[in-house]
Length: 266
Ligand code: CA
Image (cartoon, rainbow, N blue to C red; front, side, top):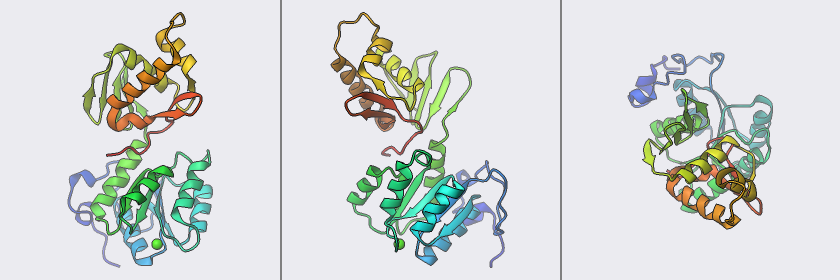
């Protein structure tokens, strides 16, 4: 074993990588309280070791397993904070594991970052379709990997910040000032679009029917049709750009604001 190095020395010298939420790290398998736990499911031993080594040095509590079945068991029993999941595993395909995690209500908020040697765009699409939160292709740079994992973990933190400010993934909203930003860029919304966004946001993870939205946003006595709701949601999504997918369509019913910030195209 090489001697423990500082985080700065290990991951390409970017100050950004000094994760202030975590204590300084060493090689030891010290598991501090409150450390972010990452489960690595990867059958190739050398890659798994590189991942474990670098993620530990980035301040994470890392457990690596070789097989999908074992990984899925740990997901259910240990509740890690993030799963780094190889696509090609000897027993269960990574896509199936991701689907299982995302299908189960108790684990669906768990961020999954998929790893694969296949760089084709189709794989990327498949990854997002099954609900993966991000996708990293091999060979990967350790620096990029750590940054992406950190970004995915941050997206999962939805926190109200002082007063009227709300932050949800890439979306930031000042309720009092009626201002909205996506990835720090201000988005111009009409008063109605703003109200629609806030109405959906306040009822996160609950389906809102078109009728209910009409009542809440437009008011009861309106003569407009529910198609107007669709048109406004469409326009709102267009304006939200990278944050558009936070508003989910529930087929045949209406709309729902995501429970947690999900992966958005970057
Ligand atoms: Ca593999």
